[in-house]
Image (tube, rainbow over all chains, first blue to last red; front, side, top):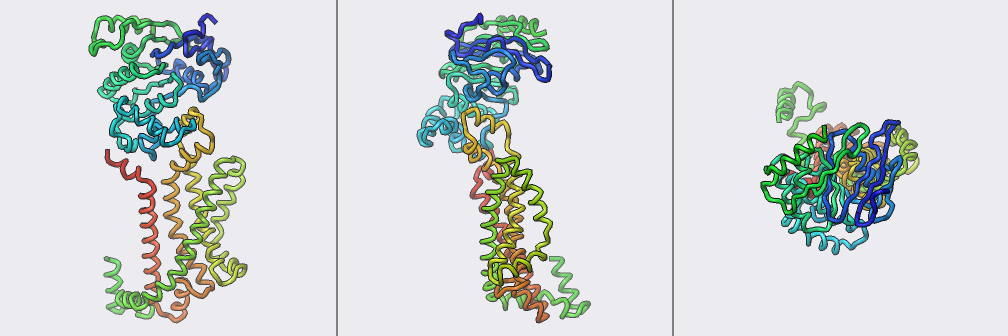
Length: 251
Length: 239
């Protein structure tokens, strides 16, 4: 109500949801601008995934609304693309066919869909993987392919639910760099769900902190550091200052 | 090898009279002498097995797919499927022959009955093992049921399907032979009955070995087809 849907690609208004009379999330308000990366940070069990499922339209909230570009999409799946920790690439399709799949489902001809997807392979750091099967790729490469697929099925916005949390530390940090690089080039706004504070500060323009039982948005932190951020940003005093603030608010 | 050696020794020292247990040498001799005849008879049996298996596969696909799509059908048909498996093949073969005569029809029918079940059950298992998250992801992309079926469910079930098929090919050959025992004009089962009635134990053994070889070859063929149809399985091993 207070947040206008103008300028915002996604708005969730006063969203609450309970299961078996257990209030899981209470009166959540979030918004997202074009090309913005917004993290939803909170401990496990705080209701992040419930909110995720409401935003993607899989669950119907008990109260509240979700708007995509001004259109009410509450409880309507298929409007917002999402990506999970599991890459969910189909093992029997080549990487190219996996990424082209959303376009084909939308009715594009196979040839055109492949051409459109393969044009993005270099940008996503996937060149040379077109004809490979997912099992032949490393975990990091599979997540790249999954993000490309998510991007191709998106309409300017994607939900990422802990997409990098299954990766080892080194791969993870390489993926963060790659992700920021990609996001600077493509037209995609992201809600990024994570429980990793460093990851949230590193990647986000804004962070919503979710705490309590039922889960509520208890703080909103803007990361003012302009992108592209320097490589050593995560070692800077500024970064630690953000981290201190967040840790305080999370507890 | 050891089995054959013991077998040869037992026969060589006349532990068992040779009319009851022929020596490996005489079985090999019978195998080579009768090979053209065996080939001729196997053509009939293989034709029955091929047609029966083909019909069995098609029926299994249709049944399993419908059962997966419609829950009610699943609940209604699953017990029937199980019961169909408990009917002894040897018991219904004569009935089928009485109904359908001495030609290929009753043999094919019996093969369809025996091969249909393992394929249907393996397909049902395959459909059920599909990753629910993958299905909802496709749905979130706006995919319809038919698209989800052909893009996710069917290909994910292929490995289970081939496991079922491997069992079914050997069932098909054995089923055909059993049906031929009970009446017919040609086929490995018919040949088997003839040599048995003539007490030609060496030829009996030869035909048994021949059937084993055919079944093994068919299983190998299934594995080769599996590799050709599922190239990702091979490539998945090496990164």
